[in-house]
Image (cartoon, rainbow, N blue to C red; front, side, top):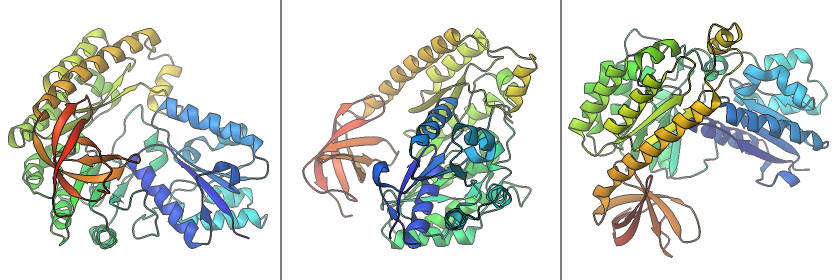
Length: 446
């Protein structure tokens, strides 16, 4: 009898790709994937521990699943690596699969079904191992988009980061396998390639004493004989800084989206030092300024964490000044998460640091987001009544499509025509903070 599996995904692009891989492996083994939790025999939660809010949501979900007495509940992703005991306390009927063991999902289920999942075996499914997640069966969420992980783990040691505890040290995948994986996806109809990892800029720095390998990888991908667009994911300032000039030249290639995601986390050098981030804010600013000078319309994305215990009102003002000056188009704003097991948690527990009042954090968050909305809207003014070329990569509703321009801006298009996967020209009729609305002018070749 065929078993139905409901897979729920939380977190980053890499997690989305991991779920695509899980679906591929499970489907190949004869399981049926369903979006309906009620009819599923097995429920899998692919978890994330980046933000406390998301983590709490997942833990409530795990607890709620106690009522599903006749279903197998599997918890995978980052949380089993860091919270195995707590997961079992929340729901003793769960079984766990570590983030370095996605290839072992079938063996885990088999052990459970055969009543042979001893505690020793369960522990092995949580052990650290170098697992290459390329060239595996996968079922993409969007056939037009190929998500390609180029490494796992990182070289960082951020005081607040729980993901590092789950993912471990940097393990870069080989260029050969990355290129083969991308080539396979392009042959299957993908039109966009998304490179992702905890920090793309530290690619291959676990094997070599220099960070020149990312530019080499990008050039090799861009030389592939297919029509596609390449999106480079997050790059930390300290690792991109030495290769900035090289990357700028690569970004001038027509196949790469003019999109730079450079998380600063704070515009205060004092706070960055306490966070154990390996750069000064002046380096991040220099990178952004160089990119903007050479590629004026580039889309800049950044991240800031509000409420680190040593953040003062002056540090907050530096964050505001940064947003005012650099006007990032995309702004990922988070309130500080205090995760057990991190250096920050230990410092607070030992009372070496004191948390900032929640009311202060909320006020600072509100001020930053309000300023961002204002500056991001100002950025969008230049698009009004302009005609631009876009690629339609997603259908949102019956007559609503999402497209991207060369700078990876979101363009919404309302039409009854089937335009998925098409290149078209649109005239921008409305602007918003994080998107614009386009009216079709004419179709181009796909």
